[in-house]
Image 1: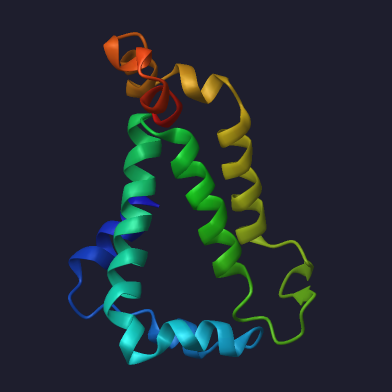
Image 2: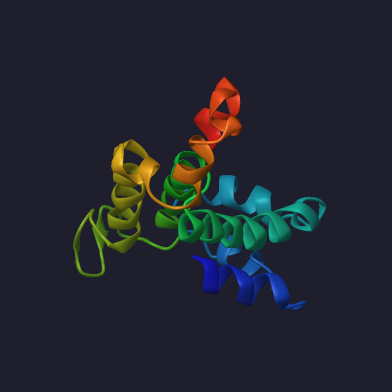
Length: 137
C-alpha cells in the first residue's frame, strides 16, 4: 500500500479517471467519481489515502482505522473491471482484492495487532489514558 501510494502521490500525472471510467459493474457510481468536478479531490484522496494506510500499518499506529479504510478501498477496487461478474479471471467471486480485504479485516479485529508497533508504545503513555485516542492509536 505504501509504495503504490507514494508512486501515485508523487506523480503529478496520476489520475484515477481511466480506472473509474472503465467500470463494467456500477458504471454510474464509479463514473460519478470520474467527473471533472470530483477528480480534484478523488485523485489526491486515493493516492494519499493508500499512502497513509501503508504508513499506519508499517509503523503500527492507528491500525484499526487504517485497516478498515483498507477494507473499504479493496472492496471499491474489486468491482469495476469484471464484465462477467461473479466470474473473475481466476475463479468464481474470490480474487486478490477480496483476499486483501479479508486480511485487512483480520488485522483490524485481532487484538495482537494493537499491541505491537508504535501504537502499543503510545498506549502505555499518557495518550493511552485518553479514551478517544486510545481507540485510534
